[in-house]
Length: 223
Image 1: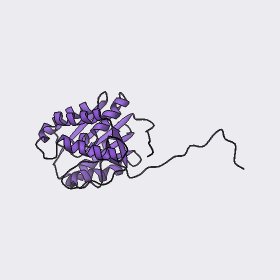
Image 2: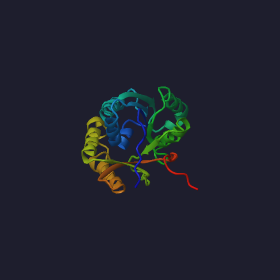
Image 3: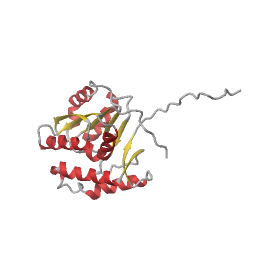
Image 4: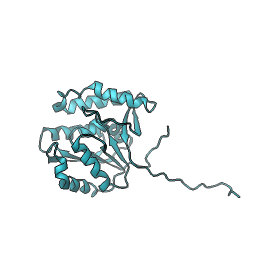
């Protein structure tokens, strides 16, 4: 399996339809990237939950999941489950996220996600960020919409444990959900780890990748 490392990570963009989506889908990766790139600029946009307990939870959680980063968070108050009917406002907010500068890496929902809010946001992303490295995270839920991912980020067991602990610490409003437990998060991470020869991993979907071949130097020309 080929490993690719981004040339640089100066700014990351985090996109979520709901508070908690980003941390659930990419929390371990955020911990790894932010610690590997001290001072990275992280901008987050969440479409729902503004001016509520969910926003308070999200701000505290993302601060914990992005240690040492310069973090900016915007939480809108679009109605949960009705994001497709608020396309214009969501698209405008998404486009405004480009103002501070081009992101080197974008985390967003996967376009095949069965939840209408997740799917709508995922469909918007390539209309605003056409030439960016975009990773679509996955969220386990009742719909059974998980499909085989193509990108993996291995997680050491302490990082996975930290992710699960932070999810439970910061998202108290979600603890009564039947799927919100350590077995769910750890189980999916174990499966994704098996698929990339690691113990645990987070996995993502990527729709397009362009390969560049550097010119060879110092070699004799071929006759």
